[in-house]
Image 1 (cartoon, rainbow, N blue to C red):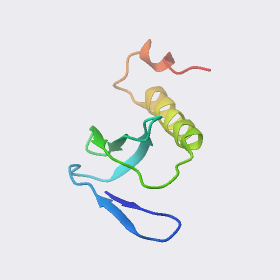
Image 2 (image 1 turned 180 degrees about the vertical axis):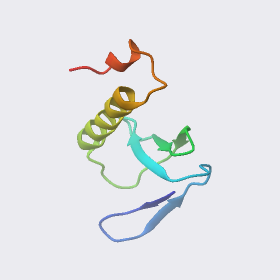
Image 3 (image 1 turned 30 degrees about the vertical axis):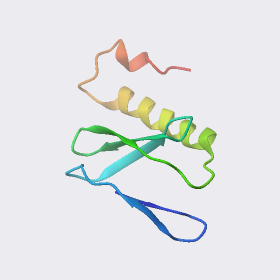
Image 4 (image 1 turned 120 degrees about the vertical axis):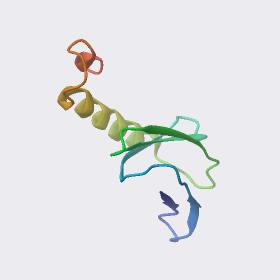
Length: 87
C-alpha cells in the first residue's frame, strides 16, 4: 500500500503486509495510526506520522460506512453484530 501526498504527488510511504488488495483505510483521530482492510481478510494497524493536513471527519465517515456495509453483508457476522453500527 502506498501513501501519496495528494497536493504534490510525493510518495510518503510504502506499507507492506497485506497479501491481497486493500479495500479500505481509516486514520485514527490523532492521525498517528492508519487501519487498512484487505481482501486477504485482515485488518492491519500502522503507526504513521503525517506531515500534511487530513480531513479526519471525511475519513472517519467513509470508514464507518465501509464497516457498516461489511457487518451487514458478510455472511460470517452474527446477527447481533450486524447491528453494531446502526444509526
